[in-house]
Length: 516
Ligand code: SAH
Image (cartoon, rainbow, N blue to C red; front, top):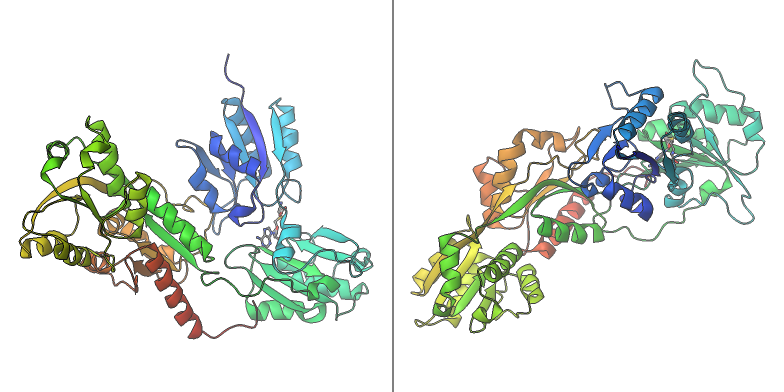
């Protein structure tokens, strides 16, 4: 018998990735197909299992979106194929999400289903703009209203029933009708002085909040150039600004990253901690050369060396995993001293239970070489276990000092042929920066997706290019590109620091709108 398919209607929350539920995330990680629209965060794409089918059914400029019947039909079809389907919907599926209609269609076709509630934008978006939808002594209720069918053709809608409510009014899908809604409420009896707000892209790095009295809200929104998705809040609570003090240094900055999964994960974490919105643009995969004759010979002859030099976390992993698989074990390196290029590599080495004997002050190949030669003598023999395309600088410094060395290519990195996050329909925020962490990353990127570079910045110019050090900057130069930001030290902290400096310099030179 064919496996029975199943559909989960999952609320994705208001946009920020962290606001999705744990249950929703687990389903995304294990489902066979995901059907999503433009309000879902693009981040979910990176947690799907390989081979998961992604179907975009949302609206996009210039393209016709699927009708509700077509979407329901699609869910039924996928489930009948025996697939576990996640229907991912912005916010909560039952708040203006047409989740009920999809369920009725599934019921009609006897498809099993389950619903996973989401954080609705109706509450979360005002909340993240500092507006509590209820507040003791100020607002005892809140009302969520669709603005979709209001206004149009210059007529002022009859808003008396809403104007009579003393609680907070929250309008979804109302931005296009903002002036009709405001005029209707005032005509219905609300004071033009009632505090009100429009919040665009709530919870996202490009969130903008406009506060104005109801009477001038529409005019101000036009002046500020606000757009959708947006929520309108009307009521005394809109005067509240319950926001944490002091934005993080990279808040509002969208950063594309390239690199191997382990590096990208560490970089992402460091950037997100500082408030950045991070997008994986190009994943690089590590291809170990552990079965090559050179590597096998090096493992066999480890007793002939006195120092082992490792210049990346990937190198550390490849070296030790390969060593074990070669038939030897960690006792084979007991006599060796370890030199590493920086903190990231040192951290990886420590995971294998070894302490580095030398880390240069400045994390680059030249400092590593120069520091090493001070510690080494003629009797030493150095094993350089590095990426196939590693820079020639390190061996050159050692040779100059008359130190014997062997350079063994341990692995290579190649671009993984995968869609970058956010490239499958949902319009992601444009990138402010694109970060390269290695020369091979630069070559991989320009080999795979050079033509897309301009489009990553959205309607703006191309993103600013940031890199981890001189060698990566040089590789950019070889592709006719200028590195706008070069890390102050050649590690993740250095990248983060230099990006922060660049962001703050640029913010200073920009004039500010009177909105947050
Ligand atoms: N089911 C969703 C609402 C879908 S209706 C929920 O529970 O949140 C779509 C409307 O939601 C948009 O027109 C807009 O008014 C609002 N919306 C959704 N996400 C938003 C966001 N991040 N910022 C501002 N408004 C948002």
